[in-house]
Length: 563
Image (cartoon, rainbow, N blue to C red; front, top):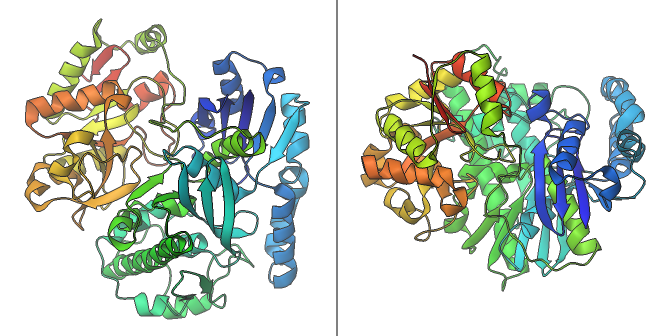
């Protein structure tokens, strides 16, 4: 059975191909269009799915779409009516795109793909719940989904048992923890649906001195249910997400070219702290609804808040927690497809994802052609072990290496296939890599650590615990801080990825680096520059390598240096 999953028209459009419940291929559209967080119909991603599966559209049994467009349109019209005439500008701007294509998903799919089979429209938050639960190792779990907004839902609690997912409680628009967080992302001069992680990173440099004022904006009950005071927010009515009342409370917003002040840092810390308070209350309430269920799955964009996720173990009863690497909208493409397979078509839950290497890969012949076209000198390795030895040695000598190997990762995190790698042992390496990527210096880097050595460096709940998708921050152990200075954030935490044999060459590289240096961890960041999607082709990797001060590029069986 082949199922094609699609997400589109909000942000991070994506497509996936499922065969008998297992992922054959999955990729975001941005990787091909080179438009970061591209929301267009993912036609190139779909073609790649069919190409990789060696099938045509007639072989697709079902198509799954990650939300219900008509229900979403109903909510948007309802909002326009309730906020009229203040919503006139938004109405004039937004309705044409809905009338022209957003509401016509079925006809677009049939026209663009010449598809004549059955199309299922899976509710947005159910798609989030499905990818989180069906891709997990659990047969029974509480499921919490939190984001900006789907059709109506912004927060939902579910129970997953066997192949069934049951809704228990939900909160609807306009009361949204995701939109609350995004409002302050924009207020601090960052981009909505793109830079929320910048607010999270900035929070470590401030103190939560504005918590009292922020709690004037959002009323929270002990069960985690919340209600925004809409007198401070404008996202229902206009282009700007806040209004003058919020500016009276916190002053004027930061312009993108303004220097970040202590006030901005403290405001970020306060927003992060309040978000964590609410998030953890919601999770504790989830446990109270199903007290005998020990497993937790999390989904939706808010579940990408790694700093909050790391606190779940200490501040809730859950000890086994799973978050899919692409917990946001791109993951909804896979979630909707898995929901059709398991729930609608009634197949048992039997697979879980050990890695996210679901994308494109390039043979050495294509890579060599790209290198030769650029007239680059390179060393070729017939044995990948020798390549790994060479790269590990270069990393130990503080060289920054672009790493382009095997299948591309799915989702927003580089997990060892399309990464920029560096030695984590020295603080100056953080500055060096941030300059290469043209990023703000306050932003931290993640660490990829050997799974069986994770507790040597980090205060994780259990020995040899599995955190494969870089969705959790943990405290760095005091005795380890001097060993990984480049990835210790201001608050003494680090976002981690545990690495084992499922990571193939990347695992072997870190093992070799550990043999050389005694440090079982390396600095890992995505292979892209500021404002770009992660590189997809060899040509893109080579271009980024040449226009930066990256020292080396390991690509396929080849190693390229600047000299």
